[in-house]
Length: 209
Ligand code: URA
Image 1 (tube, rainbow, N blue to C red):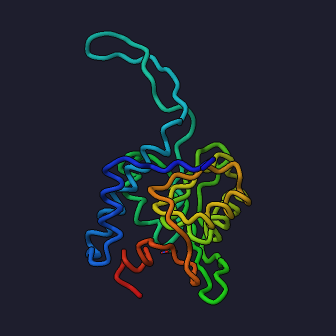
Image 2: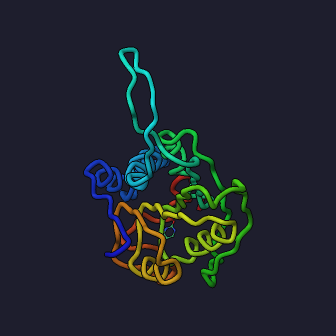
């Protein structure tokens, strides 16, 4: 699928299967989501540009690579995006964070924004949107719309699970934004949930309903 990278690393796939099981505890679900967040971050950041700097080791001077340009921005979509954030911050601890508060109206599945706070200079930074469930695509589309409006240009989408319907709608709106996901599932149900999926990610993280 063009523009979609399925992260098929065995550790990611194993952890995802544990998360899907309905009897997995809230504590384990949260821990696994954080761990997969870190593993996905490794893939999403694989092509970040490097520059060469001159350093001195205890033995001798050398030319060595370091990340070029301004720090990354992670943009978790509240609430469930927060579950992958800490795992990502463990790999990129100096990253900035843009919080995006969006919810789906249950009746219409339309997206409503209730919070947005981001660094000011988004145009100079790679921005990784974090939304574990790319279901209808509406939330991810709204998040990327908002980030573009705030100036972001290099935007990448990290999710845990994606539905084919969500991917095609998202790519229709934002063809230049690549997607990383641990799996592409079968389809959506009538309520916009992913099948076979793992249920409501936010509820499973926080023990709500
Ligand atoms: N959001 C979720 O948490 N789960 C789904 O299956 C779809 C959207």
